[in-house]
Length: 269
Image (cartoon, rainbow, N blue to C red; front, side, top):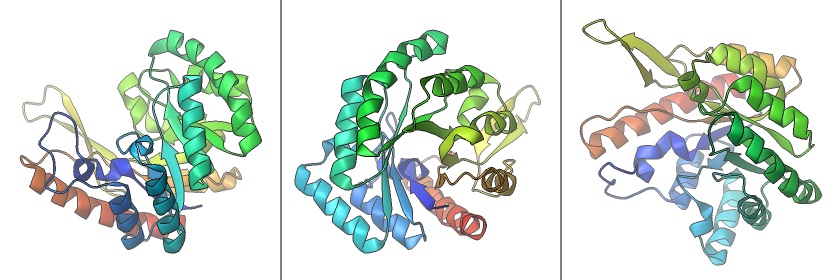
């Protein structure tokens, strides 16, 4: 398994809409450097760092720097329109990467139904190129129905990007999500968390934690993947809470990312 750093592990450093921007926003090249420093062997660019904004020369520079650093690349977007998926397939080919991650943006069962013909339209091109399309689970879709879509389309170039926490918003536990989606996973977003009562005891707060410090059974998940013969990339993401200022939040996020990558390195590699 490859250990990866995702752009959503450093989301505050990249910049979060609706919040003050960081003094020096992290760009694609900065994410490569952070991944190298933290011991990753894989970098996954999410839709918060869209590579479609890079020029052809910048894409080639990104590919060269990743090769020099010994880093594999994965890229990501949102949506399933064939034009969107094929444009990111072209970027994947330019970068020499073999995985494109996306998510279905339309909610509910109608959203899954609408995505099916889109996937069927784009996937033959992915199959010919030898590139995998990894569709991420999200709280907008029931996991059983989502898994059913992936199985029904049944393409060798289609798999799941298993996010350990996204589906909690649909009242689906990480254990249930992992149990259903791990057999289909080609990528895993490790996102640890805690749940605590609010001070007045009437309600709960779900917050991110560094990997290994929350309630997610990361060793069990990795062991289960290996026992099932799966070899997905294991990509760190974080839900770092706002600390009152962008500087303090980015500082905490960096500390959590380093702590998390150190922990995951002992389990994954």
